[in-house]
Image 1 (cartoon, rainbow, N blue to C red):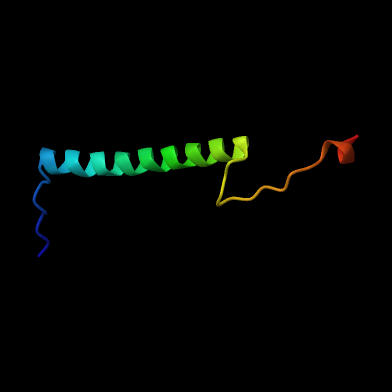
Image 2: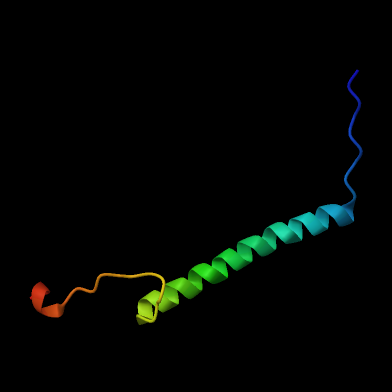
Length: 57
């Protein structure tokens, strides 16, 4: 016979939600940091092929 599960406490639910939100926050911070380093050209782990202006003209 099926038995209903116990209800998760509010504090446990809040802790889990905050952990989930914090993971997203740090992923966004890392992505922004990588984008900044790529745009300034100071990236050491991500290589972008530079196009010369003479080739475009």
